[in-house]
Image 1 (tube, one colour):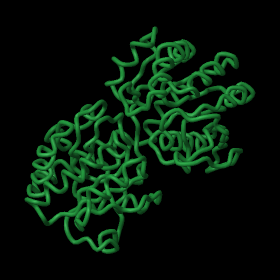
Image 2 (cartoon, one colour):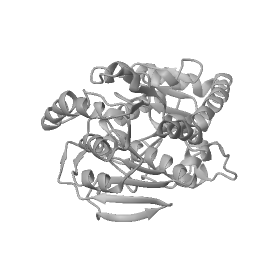
Image 3 (cartoon, one colour):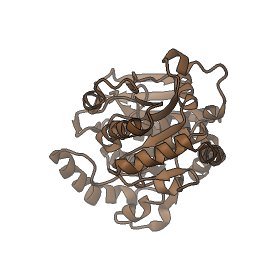
Length: 376
């Protein structure tokens, strides 16, 4: 089968959508398919060279983008003729309402390819500049409605999206929920884990691992950390992830507090696994979330979760079973639940076992199998 993934980002860009595409594409190549990934030539910080290369057997095509709207949307219409010429069996586009979704839908119609689309949990009230909000309104209400008519199946990564997407989709039977997954390498226990030794940490770790973006509220994480440290000083808080506008704010909030560590960004999988497995709690104080991959990675590492009940999160995190849900902005509530988990080994260990078991449902091999069945 000849498969095209059309994505707003791809390696070396760091982001959930790009990681999803890479996980699926790598498995589809191993199954003997010819897999192509089409993406704009940027790493989410700057332009990178356009052109073609092969990564792990995946044919990667990077296109010069004409302009960028807001923080995330890029316009690269050259993908349209490339998709038509490629004569693909399946075109799988990723991220609702972006221009490449519309181009993918048109290309599938003209080339008679099956079109699968994964929405990746869009929302309308994200932090966007005025031009982004205007373009979003036009895309949602005009272009995306048309594109959905040229889409065979729409993959929602969380049930939360159903109500949102049905406002734009005429055929509700096209919608199917298939969550994101996680790599089974996160289940493998690292022997001689030297993460704490290398970083001179002797106590328990509460981890924030994700993009330093306003929607993920890393600033609130620092505020929560300081509240915890006043009552429970024997703990270290780690913040790690690519900067998307919040790094300087986070650094300023941390100040001289040595027990809150802002670590350098890493793409080293082994280092990331060591970090998870050295931690005791994973915190996610986000204002908005889709269904973050880090949630499942933390579960696979046996970490209890303390998170906000936003969008897809409460479908996966149940109170007292997988961790605790605390309303956005309730930093006192976050403090109380984190301290409870730090003090209560019995509860922490019980939740850890639950999460290890739950995470196995989200193995990428299982998720890819479900998606391949949609391809036909």
